[in-house]
Image (cartoon, rainbow, N blue to C red; front, top):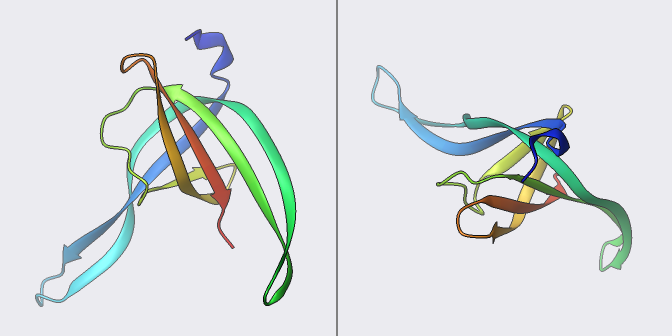
Length: 104
């Protein structure tokens, strides 16, 4: 994986539970890692669903390998939030391809 192609910066966030001073659990998104990425593909698709027409922005990022990235996490890129739909390992722990859909 060539470093020159990793020309974007993304943040991977995990949904975490913390306990405040009163013992009440609170849930929030916490940054897992900030990493360089390459955009492999981006497109917007329009669908007709039961509630009417809607569109989805799908984007695929290629990054260096990072252990611990899961489907329950999300990606923040250019101020937009994307839900992770698929994660594929590139090579033997060389990199990741992360397929995301813009959160509505």
